[in-house]
Amino acid sequence: MSSDRISRRVGAIAPSATLAVSNKAKALKAAGENVIGFGAGEPDFATPDHIVEAAVAACRNPVNHKYGAVGGQPELKEALAAKTLRDSGFACEPADILVTNGGKHAVYNTFEALLNPGDEVIIPAPYWTTYPEPVALAGGVTVPVLTTAPNGFRATVEQLEAARTPNTKALVFVSPSNPTGAVYSRAEIEAIGKWAVEHDIWVITDEIYEHLVYGDNEFNSLPVVVPEIRDKCVVLNGVAKTYAMTGWRVGWMIGPSDLIKAASNLQSHSTSNVCNVAQAAALAAVAGPLDAVVEMRTAFDRRRKTMHRLLSGIEGVDCPEPQGAFYAYPDLSGVLGRTYQGVTPNTTLELADLLLEKAKVAIVPGEAFGVEGGARLSFALGDDDLGEGVGRIAEFLS
Image (tube, rainbow, N blue to C red; front, top):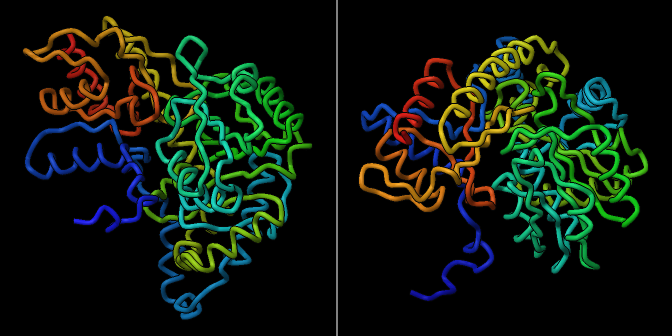
């Protein structure tokens, strides 16, 4: 078969490792296996009723049976501008917003509209598995900056400066972080933002976990802390995590008018408008109360403490306490190279496969996030399953 049957550009895309783990766990469950999955990056709550009801009403309105505005329904964009000011203090106009088919689409649009071949994008690692792929599709080059557990998985200005070259076009900044749960302080955000301004570097800041912070940690929006970055800053967000709406596929990007216009033009030829019914649901979500996220955050806070305690109790496992999002990211390097049931895993990828096969527990190995030695475990699952799942890991590794 010809090597050119599939385009080299698309053929080079790595499949989503997080979705692969979730799908494998679901397949084993469907086959009757008692699998506990820590792989899913989605809340284990139903979408709140008032949001669902708004979608039901929208289905019955013939207006929503037709094409809509490519960039998003005007009333939703108005609500998103109001929500952004309410939640982060960032003032923007509806014209600065492009509504996208989920957060991933916002990431894709941003890099397609921003990058030229050879442009470099600095991305602190461990990073969300999706970020490097649209960078590569746009002809860009990912430059990872390694963060570690001892430094709280937070990149420093010194690290970013060491990674900067004349080809550096942008920095991807995420706080709270997927996959590590790290939250940057206001002072750290200010230093990074001013560094980007000084060197004329774009910042793509992903704020989708803005409401999921715990303890004394606080969310701070980078363009609010460093307003002078505004003309070279893109804010990414969506309803998925805050309102338990991962399947509804509504995200958005906020940025300078020329970039939003370019991304909207791209979207007009790729997907056109986001589903009108999903947009009606998103409108009800962002314009409504935050009661549901408060309830979810309370549950997640309890679970993160439980997971941190249980994982920290396993010999050889170093687990920083998650500060935000709904993930723990333990360092498992201390349990590698040992023999378990006749098998010796030397990488976290091998260990994850072994845990799924022998202990029936699904975790996402660090290789998926650009760094070996760690793993992401979501605590967006029931308390009983969480305790049982970590218990199986502890028993297997003992």
